[in-house]
Image 1 (cartoon, rainbow, N blue to C red):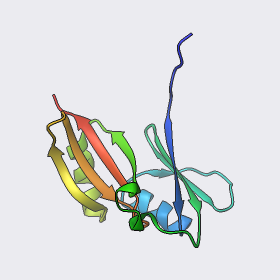
Image 2 (cartoon, rainbow, N blue to C red):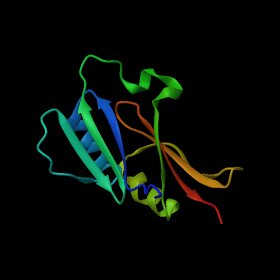
Image 3 (cartoon, helix red, strand yellow):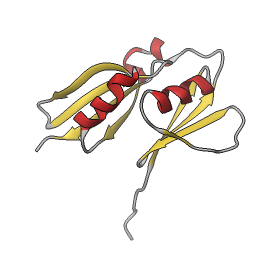
Length: 123
């Protein structure tokens, strides 16, 4: 039998779950998920899901340098997604750029400093 993988879910530690969920909804155009779990918030867009757990008193991701990268999400229509979130005020670290490894990539950062790479296969 062969294993079949499904949806990916990224679990992040954040200082303010309400503010981080609002950023994902308002700036990155994700949908909030209505799950009753104290200290947690959840968002999803397509098959990409983020579960955010409130971790007050731990170092924020922005202090971790390269260890703050948490996800690479493949998107069909990366330039369209960029055009959708740029006017919303998303913190875009670099706009869509073709890379020599065959991907068009765009990096964003969350309020806690988690960095997410959205990418599309070139060609």
